[in-house]
Image 1 (cartoon, rainbow, N blue to C red):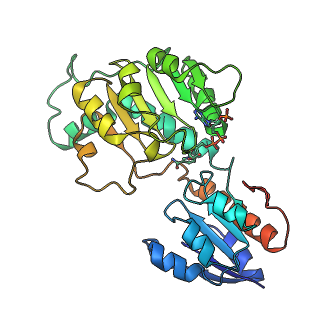
Image 2: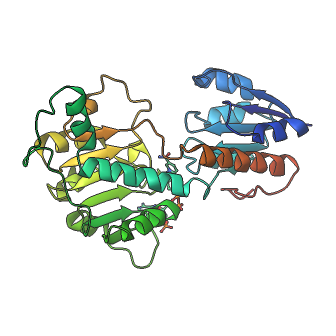
Image 3: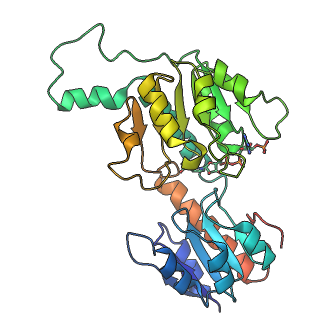
Length: 311
Ligand code: NAP
């Protein structure tokens, strides 16, 4: 029996299966443990179940001498210093596939909402400004037949491309390795909608910046359901203000949560959702299943079913 620390209560029954085999502490609060508390509670743990709000950095890993496994609840694992974990022989796992469709659905929900200015239109109803049917009001962009540029044609990017086929969209894509990709510059110049689906890495940090935003069409809409720091937010704010692009819909920001007084939020034609891409009950329960399977395997001395490093 090993000691595991889980940084948040999770939906479903997966944590009961973990607790049947190991000694488990689950952080009970709505807010995550702050970094110092996380470090303190990780000392002595053999297994950690963490998520996007938990910075599992080199100092935490160095302080946790008995740590054998980090199961991250999410497909992205940029919150974990994987290199530091690998150096110490600690397995790191993620939860791919089970959240792909949920995240692709949210991506399309944001794309459609931004194209049709849905939040602004709904707000006029609540404000009592719906006084007549108007031929010129709330005019949005046509999605049918438009060109969608997908940055990172991995699991989620491909699921978004499948949805785009139903709208007869012309899909372009870029990636770091994939064969039929085009350059990011060409994708930005040719797309009516640009959707980000690459991981956050040193290469993708601020991939969307003043220079790359300037390549986009003034009618184009940016959708980001990948990670906030892939977009240079002050540059995006300026691009929205200046009409360099027509709109943006973000499920992820930098930082998270985005403070209510962040300058970005005063930008025009902007939708911000609170990082809910994987947020269906079924997806979140399956993510818990995978994270627990990862921990159980690693604590039994086996490779995790979804391990992201070689140890
Ligand atoms: P994936 O299958 O690994 O796909 C990532 C794709 O990004 C790969 O095709 C990869 O291409 C490409 N890529 C890597 N570096 C790139 C670069 N420099 N420029 C352009 N493309 C690059 O991952 P996934 O399961 O689709 O998830 C993608 C990301 O979505 C995750 O990393 C996570 O951050 C985010 N996510 C967010 C939510 C949410 O709640 N909003 C939910 C799930 C996932 P190559 O194979 O050619 O390297």
